[in-house]
Length: 305
Image (cartoon, rainbow, N blue to C red):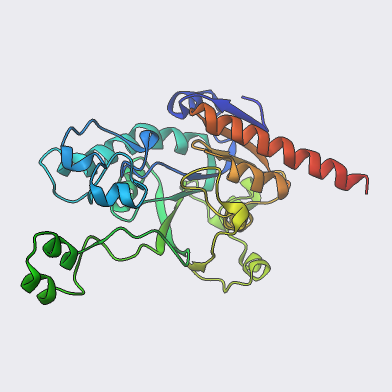
């Protein structure tokens, strides 16, 4: 499998073409399994309450296209989603482990509700769960419904006044978990030995100051205008750059099996890392290609100015 290339197709199959112990970092914004869009649906739930067609959904622009109400407990079928998500991650996590160098990191963005299932699947595949980074994104869409509005629509003003201030749903999700896993290093050695052999296993604390941050696992970073508009769950470029610099050095290989609009790959390129990307959605695949071509053109122009 060639370096500095995006492959169109199912990463569960494509990754089988990558040699053992060849990747320095896997960084990916994996599907959360919360039915945000077609690519985030892991099962066929026919419950009409979950199809995103309520008046409130339509009024706010139907943020969740495949699920109209919160994940928890709407039907027996719905309660199986956690187990189904665990089994889905288990399908491919072992291949991720295989391609990584000993001591190398896997860093994934995960939904708050299903991140425990994700952690268990990675651990059961052989990874060590290293840490959880709290990404504070500053602002986020919020779709909790005011209980008073429900009662007002029923002309029950007594209940509307009694329950003023109460909401149905979750708190505003300004925090997003980033899960950090590590491939175990060889028995009989140490991580210090592993760094000498494979150049992975430790992290570079100094890079935090480049982003105006303290070296801890609570990262505050808002998206800029340029970080939006290409993908529904697009992540800030600087956040991806930070995570790459934290765990790799120049000329290391970064893999993103769910590369979406290509932010991980752009970040890797700007940091003089090599990359492999995988994406099965044709629109996002083409977006990634275009972004990388633009970055290459800009870097070429810089060389001659």
